[in-house]
Length: 131
Image 1 (tube, rainbow, N blue to C red):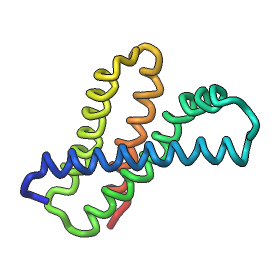
Image 2: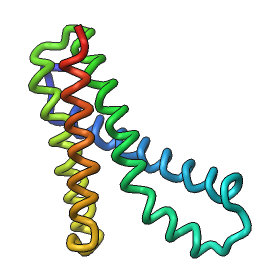
Image 3: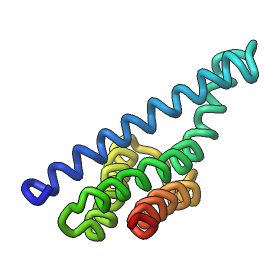
């Protein structure tokens, strides 16, 4: 992973974002069809907006944990650096996307910080708890 590390981290961060969006869609679909069916579409859109940061935080923690664990087990060079660069790359891309979308930061800064702190924690614990 030594060559083109920035491009690889960006690609991995984008794949992680895609995976988290897919998981969020699946969560809303399960909620809409199995847990609480029969409501108008706007009800589920509101649920998606409320649940997406939590889904991102929980499943982001898991993904980042597993990636850092994989790096350490495979003996990648400087896995501790990768452990911090990966979530940092993810957060920077997230900030770029959110800013480009014109979203008001004041609406969700706390949950944004919490969800991304979970990703950093997952990555760090994945590194620390792997022998």
